[in-house]
Image 1 (cartoon, rainbow, N blue to C red):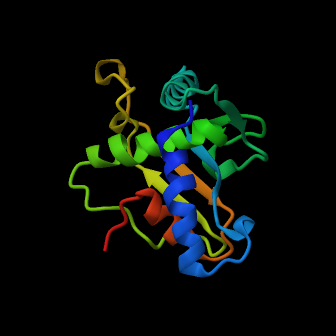
Image 2 (image 1 turned 120 degrees about the vertical axis):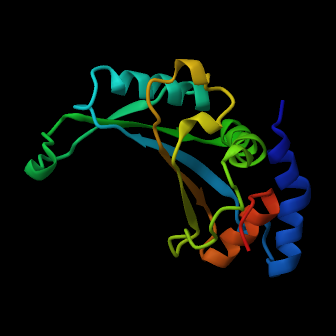
Length: 179
């Protein structure tokens, strides 16, 4: 079954972007390529914190996360090379659209005093990064089983070459940008 947001992109968003921007070729229309979700964890804070983060990120995304390790030692942070520092998941195709749909419709409105997300978090090449302070905004997480709050970074990679094209794409997909 094709996700709801993917059919919306194919039927509404892509034709609207093509006429608005005047693209001659349908392959010029920007699209979302992948979504990367990253959780950084202090492994020295609690024993088993990495495993909890992996389990929670797996529940949120529906995919098994990869544990990330430190590339080099940094003495000021008490970090050693090869030490576990977090976990990440890369979503593509249908799973990506389902996660984005749940993020837009269910998770972001659950943030306290939510007035929209900033439109200034683009990197200059059409990639949008969003930081969430808490994993409990996702309905998949049970509040009774949470030992500590854990934030995450969500990066939405688009094929757009400029920030304006990526902004139009995400706005038409339903991303709640603040004014």
